[in-house]
Image (cartoon, rainbow, N blue to C red; front, top):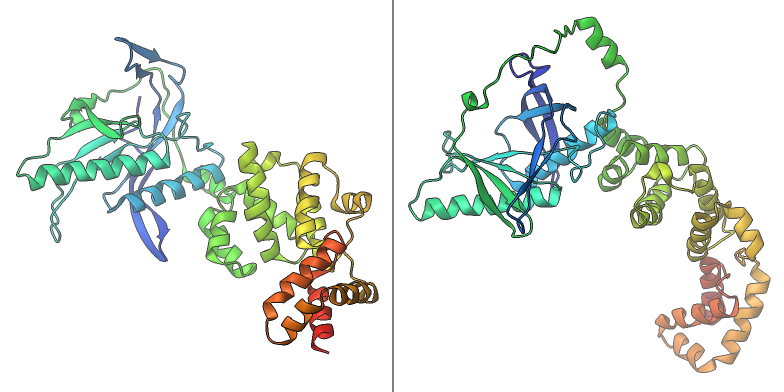
Length: 385
């Protein structure tokens, strides 16, 4: 069942960013369809399965213009499209489960030519990685045929991920082969301008706009903005953190490293992450004030993930407060220098790399609690005197 003749949208576009440049990919149309059953072929048994679990599920088909000229552009386009669909809440973006699917038409043409070559259609690509590999394989297959003087035959091909190759599924198809016909069980649906305006007024901020705002408002590098806007939940987590602490770059660093590490290792979504934005901000505030060192903060963060406790509670219960008392540090450093006269003398003769030696001894003596910045200042002052 398809809405092919009266699409919801026509003549659209999607801008993608790749290697510092922006490229506009045209969208021919967007129309609704109804999912059908699918065949599952078992390569080890002489039979096929018919899966009707998704039959009758409504889907949206997005048809792109032939503006994509590389596998990198294709994958970037799919990722940006997936991000938008997830922001809108109309798709969970899971390619392996079939929530998001991609069919690709591939053809080659000589440089400077306007005429497209004979196309083949690729199916069965259930991940961005497989899309890239399948397209690369098919491009090389086309090149091999053409350079040997052969002719590419129009057909539909399946990507075999186990063999890393494509295989023919069915021969040449044209639009009339699809046999479109009206569906008598579906009533006519009229979409007026007022309905479109009402929906438009409630749309969320989309990824490209959010990326730009993160760069401008929070002064984040494009890399950070891109990572943080990969999902609406992650972007919301970042913004919520910044309500409690005014350190956007530090927040970004922690989310991209520690938070996403735990999320990815646990196989959960950011919405199921145990450490709230307020709790993470509380930990970063302790680092900013010098209460705990960066290395200690990572230990505290690990405990926060496993216990759900606040950073300040963990720091108090474990006695992890950073040692920032200057007089106490001076006494400890004095003993360390006195116990290592040879290293102190070498430092004074120009071997400044030994600073790491003295800081290491201090950290061992204070069980990692010494304020590293203050400690280095005092050590340098005492050795240079």
